Image (cartoon, rainbow, N blue to C red; front, side, top):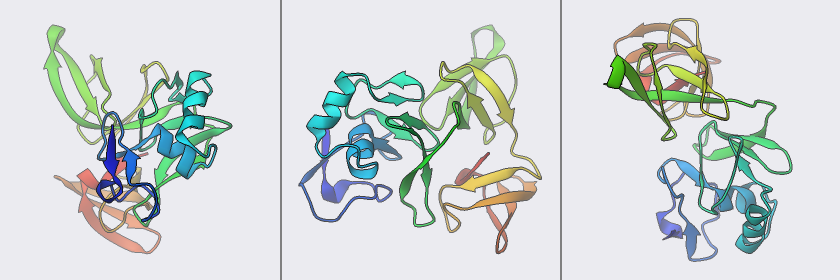
Length: 205
């Protein structure tokens, strides 16, 4: 699946000029990086999509511990890609996606929805499209840390004193500490002053 260069989401750090068509992520296309764009255009580990296809065929690429099998597999915020090294997808203050080297082997996922399912258990919808079922009751806006096989490793509540990362809004790409929580808004202390922002704009880390 492809899109014209003019249709590419602004988070992708791609040049304005170049080939007419760019790969579109298989899922979550509005907030993720297609594998081929990550490897070829951002990490510069290949020069062509054909080279990336060869890496996929030879099982040299993994996303969150699982072997990639499609050039358009999506890489979402705080997901990991394993290539020559391990990289974590983050976001710059410019609002553009960026990869940084990491030693982490788990991933942080924001709870964006939940519902009761069979057996009175709770099903949580996470920001990368993943969903898990648990008997434990967490709040929308909290963060769940999952292993490579999607097992729950840790829960981080969006509470006072917790560190957050802003992925949208005026403070995009910045980290801060929660000073207070009131309804759908939180007060966060950044390096330069405090700000009241929406819970929907941050992920607790």
